[in-house]
Image (cartoon, rainbow, N blue to C red; front, side, top):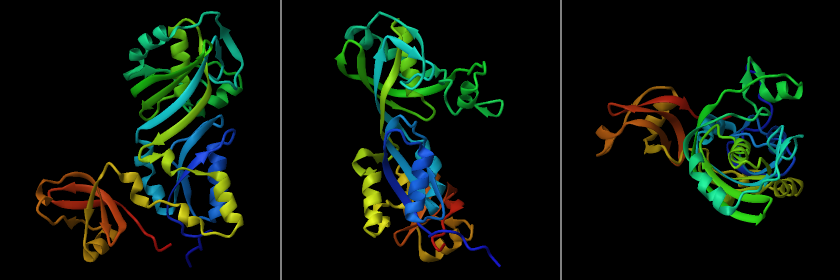
Length: 305
């Protein structure tokens, strides 16, 4: 006899505006409890001291998490000059200081060095694994270790405000694996003034932006009032905005659900290729690869349970 799953079969994406001083794991746990959902995941961890977009996947949406994680991210962050810290943000102890302060011209002249594909050493307080252990765990234990530089892509880095001589506000558009705290640290070193992040907000993850974000307090109030929390959800396929969509018949949808390939019909079918997802009657059926006019499913979706 099959084991009954705990919770409700909730499916879709919720775009949370994560509050300050809350871990991403705790945010996911709270929403899983409020929704009484069987399965929940998220697309891209946010540090406790960061706020902003945390896309949370329920049920079958968890199968599309990799596509959201790989999407472009946008951050707005504030750097304080004059001190470097152990964590590269305001939480860590100061490890180096400087009386120097950069001018706006100094900062603007430096920015091109941080745009494009660059080599970046992650912060020691990060989730990077070192011999099977998380770097932040080793750092907390006082272990001596080095992290290797990795290639990351920063599509845009702009200076958007200089409130005073000690602080500057930036916006970065970047790819997967980029650490904003490392950008602040490395800019401070290059400018000869040291620096660390004192404010960080993520404003976009792939197709998810602030426009669709919901405050946790709003969801908690709705739950207390007995409202239907699924009204906060977006469709499963919203994370696949950059991928080809094909519509299939009910018969083809049934074959895809069983893992069988189907021919793509229509005038452009012979020239289609690459990753695609199939829709039938307004619901996503499968993810897969199109080769030689056929869609070969790699993930199928089941909304029955």
